[in-house]
Amino acid sequence: MTKLRPDSPVVRETDVFERSDALVITLEPRRLTIRLKGRREAHSVDYGTILDFIRKRDYQRGLRKGA
Image (cartoon, rainbow, N blue to C red):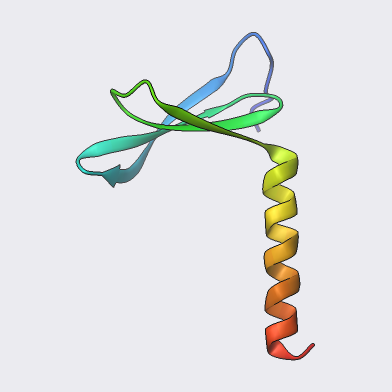
């Protein structure tokens, strides 16, 4: 497993494309950044926000199933 360090973020190009531009993900110790290859505009999300989203989604799914 790759350890995330502030001095060397991990950058990966994915196989996901939007209008022929690959999606690029940058992993840093406190956040995940997504952008399209060749573009400067990027969107960052901290890991806590991602976990909150997943918990809320799982809770809502449980409510819909009648749990």
